[in-house]
Length: 200
Image (cartoon, rainbow, N blue to C red; front, side, top):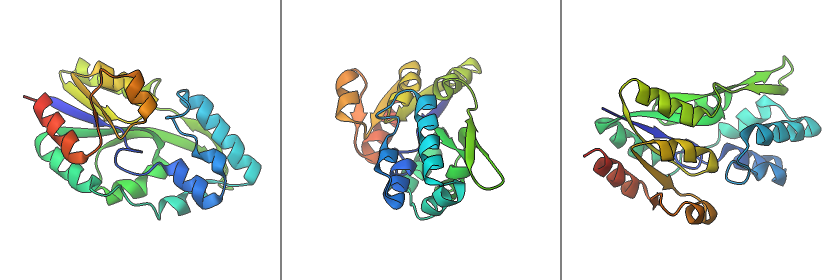
């Protein structure tokens, strides 16, 4: 009984903050969990920049509405779901992810939520649980599932290493060099194949 747990940004869809950094002309917002392993620190820093520039949820959602899943992502997910249950586990927020989940055919997503003021200012964020990716994988294992996990960033390493099989997907050279024991793939076909083999 397997559940495959996938990261979302960088694996199935482009990095939302990088897209918004480009759309808003604020290059500092390109920093992601590939650069800063401490997610709370990263998010508080981002919210400070948004406040400084007077930007809120509406502006970010306008950018997200124009983002499409990565080429091949929906077909990959559709095929994967024919032979294993799949849960997307992301540090993103419901308010960001919903339009992208629609484009991916509404897969199951576990993520977080933003605190938004009446004027649209993002005032804070509520994380679902500590170390949400690792905690989710451990919880699934505690109810009898074997997990297979894949992601691209520092915040994916916990769930990858705790799973029966785990893979890096389109990760950075630094992460691949720091974790040479984790198989790393660049194409959806390679990742599908690796997941199938792990389930034998």
